[in-house]
Length: 326
Image 1 (tube, rainbow, N blue to C red):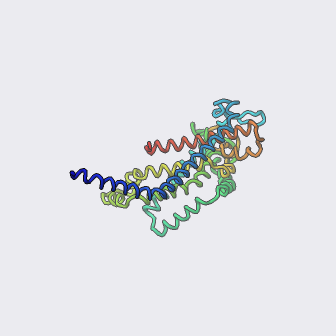
Image 2: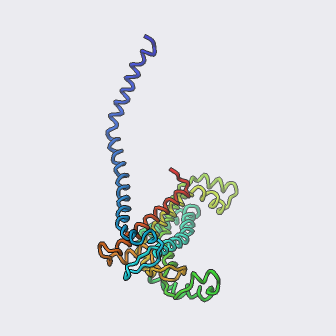
Image 3: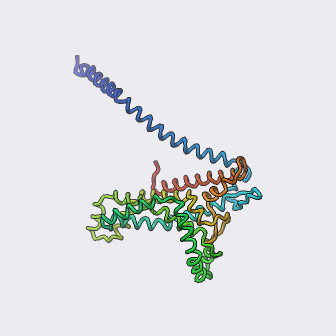
């Protein structure tokens, strides 16, 4: 008997033992695997169910108005003529304004908390930011209605109109009666709402950055600006994009706070101080008045379907910016 043939039974026994031992351990592992897979499948089923529900509910509107429903700007319940462009325009513009205002605030606050503030102060301010993120949206709406709307109507818009009404390119975005409601007011309220969420995420991302990278940059003579722009931002790029997408998603679907301050007029125009509407505010206001099976209800469900597609598109764009191809 050669050495190879002598070792074959022993190797076979070893393999059998490993397999038997693996089968003994596979019971809990299999259960855990099934539970995790079922959880992931449940999320996909619920999300797919929402998409199907909105799509089927809005099918009557899509059949009646065609794909032009998304680009038609008339919303007239009396004539039973509906178009999604006016609320979509208000949603996109107010969200962009909110993100543009909240992004520098969130980034600056997060960087100050992690790189400049004393630890005790950073802990207090960080806790306050997290508490601000827990404030209900309707509180922001009431605050905006009683504080921001009068301020915009009595101070901001009259000042801009008086000094810039003859400036080409600017007069088109500031003209209109000083109601105080409009896209700019909604954008300001949205910025205050989403800034704490973005700050919390960016703070965690900056805190996870290895201290060695910052200290190395300071040791080479870099200033705080150099460290922020050339070290922190490139290292934290993916996390920052995630924070922006989180804030954008919150702003796209915000309902009550925007309903208080945007004016709720279904019209399209470039003036930031004229009353407008968003998809969420329009659905909230008109859904209780829409009879079951009516074209109006179908149009509202179609608006919700388009808003979901818009959210998916923003998420896909964020993954492209991150370079995430998996």
